[in-house]
Image (tube, rainbow, N blue to C red; front, side):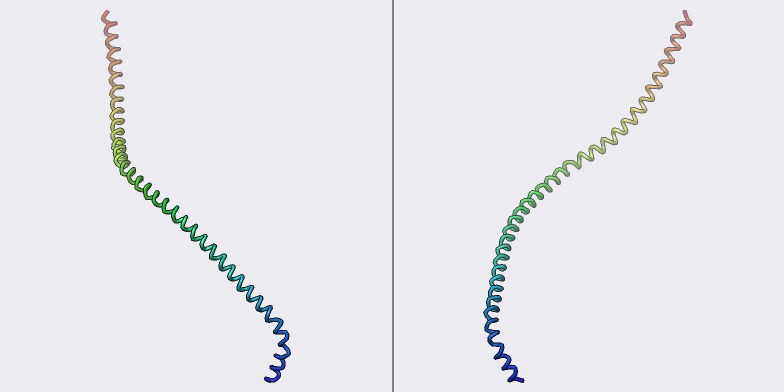
Length: 130
């Protein structure tokens, strides 16, 4: 068995000598391509890191502005709360005044009616007394 295997290997030696340089070129080109891909990915990663740094800086500015606006909104809310309470109180007072005005309107109508009747009686008495 071993002698046959060695005989076949001796027959394949010329073919192997032709295949070895091609395999070497293939593996070296594969390694070069991998190195080129690695370099491209490294460059791309550096670009992404730079972009992330810029985005982080922009977000820091936006975050600072958001905090300032939140503080301003809280201040405005503190200023508006008493005004809202005052407006609610005034609303109740306006409702009470409207009820009083309605009552006064009824009294005015009744008073005008009584005056008209009294004026009619006075005119009637004046006309009758002449």
